Length: 321
Image 1 (tube, one colour):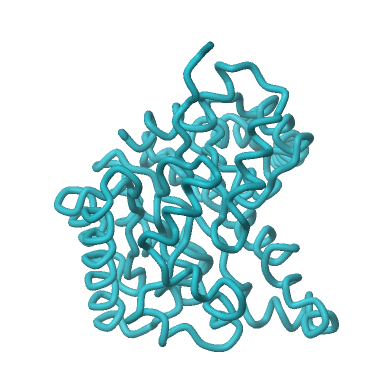
Image 2 (cartoon, rainbow, N blue to C red):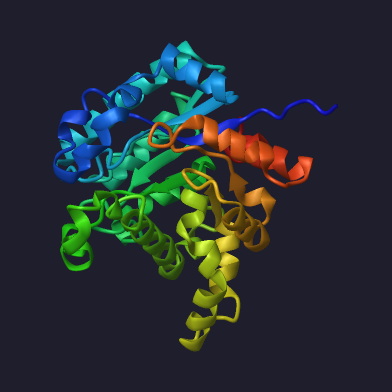
């Protein structure tokens, strides 16, 4: 009987005590309700939950929107450095159970690039996670390119995670339904639209021509983009793009995770479009419970080889674990 593959979960969140007070309005919901205590627990309670579900390692990352909406660059830098130092202490306390993605002060892109380098080279982090818009701008804006340049130089991925959409988008698209269905702004739809748009814009920006070894992770099985790859590519060809330019760029530079998306048809779509080597197991804890994620993978009708890749093999290669 083949040994059980190690299980590594890549999009697993916590909240830093000093950052949390800066999350206000709709963003404060990330630290409210039933998940609040779970977000604060990066110790034995979390590990017990991992053990019960058969998860060996969580790659910890701060909950959205982290510090992406803080305009005060000096404050953002201070908060990021402090939070990353504390997260490093958490990983050092449980090095066989936790790894980490860095928080970046995107209000100052050059300082964010420096903090990424510090987190990777001095703290041992595996990359960084950014959440939604940074100061109201998508990250394909050239002012943020120093971050991508440094990520390529360090050979670490950037995880593009959602955040609550721009207020103007909320007002135009969701206002009539947001009160009754607040998750329409988040996991039900708003997160997907914002983050898929970010993924598309990165390809259109030409950033991968400048940084050909850049690696991007999208959660939630690629925010719908794998399903739309053929159509996006076809339509952009009408505008003069190469016949497989968009699709090729996406398949070369993007990885997707299963975070909060335990669907057999969606997984099959991603495997057919991207291949099993580009899919990484994640839960989206504590917004989603651990046990349903591992149970889903256990019963998934995949080859043992593909299942081992998704559960940990791909993460080990991408994150050098």
